[in-house]
Amino acid sequence: MDLLLAVIGWAGAALLLAGYALVSSSRLSGDGVAYQLINLAGSIGLMVNSAYSAAWPSAGLNLVWAAIGVVALVKLARVGAPAR
Image (tube, rainbow, N blue to C red; front, side):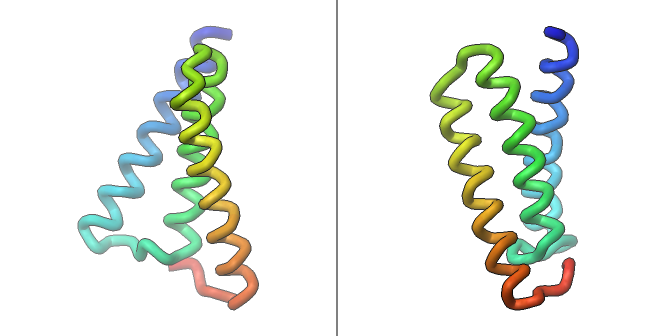
């Protein structure tokens, strides 16, 4: 179980870094569905890993990060934004 949760945490970190790198290099739009999904998945991975490790500040931060991603996705769905 420890290994699985470590992999989930590392995958989450990789997703967040990849999303940031893609937006910073203008390969992905920061206001698109793809970026929001990458952020949501990454923050959930880190949140699960942090909670398992009892790193509560990090878990709380990633909970808020995930909530921001959900709100952004809901807004994008309402306006019918294309996946960029």
